[in-house]
Image (cartoon, rainbow, N blue to C red; front, top):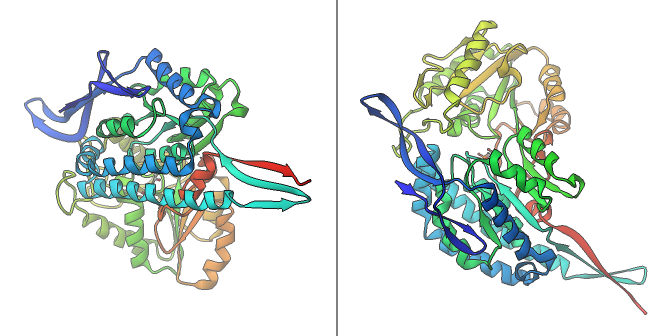
Amino acid sequence: EINQQEYLSNGEMKPWTGASHPVLSPVYIKTAAGLERKKIGSYPVCTEQEAMEALDAAVVAYDNGRGEWPSMSIQERIDCVEQFTRRMIDKRDEVAKLIMWEIGKTYADSLKEFDRTVEYIYATIDALKDLDRQSSRFEIVQGIIAQIRRSPLGVVLCMGPFNYPLNETFTTLIPALIMGNTILFKPPKHGTLLHYPLLEAFKDCFPKGVVNTIYGRGHAIVPALMQSGKINVLTLIGSSKVANELKKLHPKVNRLRAVLGLDAKNAAIITANADLKVAVEETVLGALSFNGQRCTAIKIVFVHQDVVDEFLELLSAAVAKLKFGMPWEKGVSLTPLPEPHKPAYLKECIDEAIAHGARVVNEGGGQIEESFVYPAIVYPVNEKMKLYREEQFGPIIPVLAFQDLEEPIQYLIEATHGQQVSLFSNDTDEISSLIDPLVNQVNRVNINCQCQRGPDVFPFGGRKDSAEGTLSVVDALRSFSIRSTVATKMN
Ligand code: G3H
């Protein structure tokens, strides 16, 4: 068990004496009382006052852009981040194991999450060097010598999601930091302890107050931070509802920059001309990797009516081959879910779909054992069901048949979200005719492959309520800075 007894604020590891929150792993064990989630530790629950002190430390460290950190040269900031990354790499196994225990991600995927994060940091450093080279150039326009560069924005409140608690926290935190902003970060509720081994490195590698952590119940501490008006950038990978509520609390919302990765209901469209073997393989990956708990997951599948029976048969057979187990076991891809409410919610979605005329196509689909839910293929889904529009964020594959390609396109037009689509077809004319209608609704169209965020240099964002701003390597550096001009008149 790891019982975290300190947190990082104002350059100090502050001893913790207040309330603690127990961390229960999704991994469950048999006890005399039945199946129980294993307790793996606890973390501090900061009070509003402690959170405000951490915020004030970030404000002082920024000092309206005159602080030590924003005043450093880009190379000096890069040196600090590189030093931090070397320290981080030493903790690879410890952090990956904590990811595994806290959110039930397989150990292999937890290591991948760690390595992808390190690669992302180095890619960010390279991209920053490029940006800096561009900023070092002078232009002469109409007798004015101009240097166009990028400046930091201030204090960034950074909150990552439970499904990539390290990676998606760092894909905002690192670019925000390296651009010269100061940081207040709150790890996700499921995925907190894994940051603990890194706090000492944050403390040692950055000036006092540049990186501060707060822990505990978001609804109890984050509103006060927003209301203070001292947050310059809100960055959150999570729900649209929470992001909107938080933004509204800021007293000068027009001065707040938001960099947000939010809800999505990504569709796969499988035409009559698709290679069904490819469509099935990619749908399984897209819909069920990490048990469907990815914002980029395929969350609804439109299949042409001529091929839907064959598709369902192949999909059921592919799902039946997936192995369930505990996250450290080899060859396992389905694991227990970290959010305690999720099994009951998924059951409710399935039961409601059945009540409206759908069925679970695959044997055992939707069965629950404590925090584990066996994937369910639900067909035919219609607009009366939650599964039609709601983001299930779990192992359910809702399927419906279409006659005309206009039907899935209309679905996307009416959607409140617009992140990604996967289109499966082997007819190049058909693909060409669909690219524009699709790309006008979503941020990324994947042809004959699953929806996903990577490679990380690709722009990652969304239309409508799916995002604000764009993430990825260079886009993130831009998102956490502002273009500014130094103009000198030639005499
Ligand atoms: O949950 C949202 C993540 O951005 C998904 O990332 O597509 O690499 O799994 P991924």
